[in-house]
Image 1: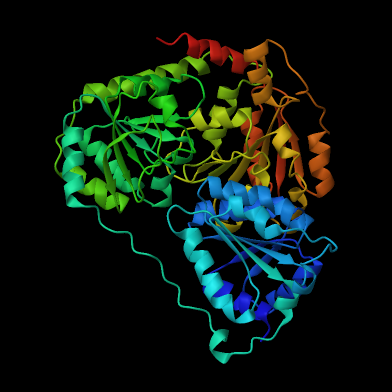
Image 2 (image 1 turned 45 degrees about the vertical axis):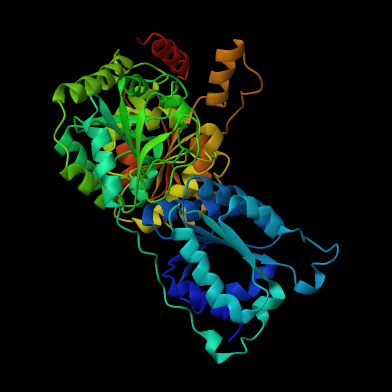
Length: 545
């Protein structure tokens, strides 16, 4: 058995279904070993696309997505998606080939110190220098990647090591898969949390990405409904409380004083559950440091001057909320009703008015939501559209609107949608992207066509980098180098063998979406959007009392 055969056996042992990547000279043995494996290799058109696919697979499944590249430029291309997974706390294992051990000490073709390059953006990384350590290395990689808080792991396999025979019979077997047990919360801390919350007059629950990772949404819903506590979500926590529920305050995360922020200002106790600072810094929702914070998570809170914890309850999220909720009486419904009314009145004001052309962001969101079912999946790329989608797009379940908000890398939309469709073939999947983000990884349209994955790509076209234009106008009153040209997206999609659609009026988007989902192949929709609405939103939010 070669080392590469053992590596593949260990990946199978971890339950790996897909390996996303590009073949290369230094991964020849791995690619050959995969031919006899049940793991399906998804050949992408760029390593960044492969990493983003592994990233979104990890978000949706809770299991580590796996990606592969060769050395040098293949590894550097992989890096952005790996960093995205770490900062967004997504389980991911990245494997890179490398030059032979006997040429790492000198200047050598395509050799760079990949291990050092990946170290700052991973939870752990290692070079495999001997075949017999592969079972331990792979088992540790998946254990560390998937343990809270999750993140990316990097394994480097030099080409000469991959080709070696595994000498020891005892080393040819993968290790038994084990996961660490999440402990119960300390009862003394539960009692302290009960006291802190019981003294509140205006409590809110801040639901973060950790709730989604921990599959604890039902516990949050029971807790909030029993106690009449309104729930505000981070962008990556969307859907923990269904937005149709009167207790949902939608999402907080806009770097402006949004409607949800005004609610947070009035709160006296914030119950932060599974909250990651990287999503939305505490200084935005606790600027005066006057909130009493009850921290409910599996790990201690990060240190931040605006997040001084009064009580920390560490352990299983569902069990923690259940035990805290048992000892509390419901709060006055008027508080949660006022909170909800504030949010909904703001959104209704933004959505008011007749259809406009180009389409206004709230109207695009309204039409998209009307076409999709509650279980369908939206993968949002990064850009101005992300801010609108994250704050306004109603979600009834977690992981139905994927937002990259820690690393917030453009280009995740299309490759992420392909991973979602592979994992959830029975659901409709749409990538919502700007024209800037779409062209960063649009080559993966060929992957979609080749694999016959009927995803829909909704391109919000404005001919520029919308968020940067927005911020330049706010700060300087003028723009600099944010405008660009675009190809004909309909013809561009058709050149790959995908379907192409163009929205030519405000009443056309909904029927075009329906047709695109029914066409049975990948589809791109070119939808002009009026981002002058961004500045109008800024003025509206500045006027909030």
